[in-house]
Length: 403
Ligand SMILES: *Cc1c(COP(=O)(O)O)cnc(C)c1O
Image (tube, rainbow, N blue to C red; front, side):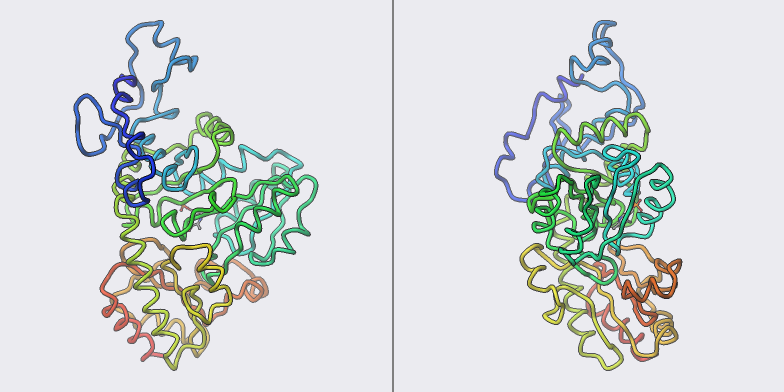
C-alpha cells in the first residue's frame, strides 16, 4: 500500500517553487484513488500482505506504515509540508507544542548536560525546564534574549542546547539568530528556535543557521483555534533521534489534527500578511494615542531592534503590546471596556485576543522577576486577528476612553 501511496510523488514537481505554493501543495502525494484533498487516515494500525512483508516493515527494511504511533500518512503529509516551509531536511509532528520542546530535550540532553534558555520564553517552557528537566539532572540557566555577549559568556563545556523564542512574548524582543547560531556552534552547542510567533511565513531560523525549529502548531499554523499540535524540524540525523523518542514515549500527533493543520497551512502566507497588516496599523495608531505610554512592536521605527527585524523577518507578526496610563487599574479598565476582542491569553487565532500579562500568563512570577522581564502592571497584550482593522481600532478606542 505504501509503495502505491508513494507512487505519484509531487516532490519533484515542487523544485524551486515559492513558499505559498509549498504551503498549498507540499506533502500531498497522489494515491491510486486520485483524490484532490489530503486524505485522512483514521487507523491505529496497518495490514501486511504476508508474514514476510510484516517482518520486513518491522525491521525497517522496506518503507511503510506499521502503527500510527510510529507513522501515519496524514501526519506524514503535515510533516513534509512543514519541512518544505522551514527549509528543513525533515520535520516530526508532536501532540502539542510542549511535546515538541520535551522531545528535543529528551532526545539530546542527559543528566549533567547544560541548557541555556532565553529569559522571556513561554511560561510552560520554563516550568518544564525548572520542575522536570532539572529533576533529571539537566542544568538550566537563563539569558537575556538580545544580549549576545551574555550568551557567549554563559556557554559552558557541558552546554548542549541554546533555546530561544524570537520575537519574544509579549514585548517583541529579538535576538540576532545568525549571530547566536555562530556563537553556539563555536562552542559545540546547538541552537533551537521556537518559531511559533513568526511561523516560517515570516522567519526561517534554519536558513539563518539554527539547528532546530520547534512550533506550537496550535497557534498560527492552525490559525483558527481548533486543534492542539506541535512540530520539530531540522537535519535528518537529528530528527532520527527525535523520531526515536516520540515513537517510544508516544506524544505523537493525531491524524485528524494533522489534517486540520494541512488545511491551515494552505492559507498561512495569506493569513500572516493580514495579521501583520492589521497589527502594524493598530500599533501605529496606538503609538499616537494619549492614554498610551509605550507600544512594543518590531514594525515600529521606535522599536530598538526594528533594523534587525527587517533583516531577519519577512513581517513583524501579530502580537502588539502596549503600556497604558493608570497602572493595573487602567489596564483592567481598558480590557473590560472592549466588546469585540476576546479576553483570553491565547494567540494565533483569526479572532483578536486581549490579555493582561502581569496577572495571567506572567502572574506566577514574583514582582521583581516581572520587573526584570519588563512586564509592567500597565502592560496589555493584543494578539491581532483577521477582523476588519477599523472594527478592531474602534474596540481599542473603547478601551482608551475607559482609562
Ligand atoms: C503556546 C506556545 C507553546 C506551547 O504550545 P502548546 O501547543 O500549547 O503545547 C510553546 N511556545 C510558544 C511560544 C507558545 O506560544
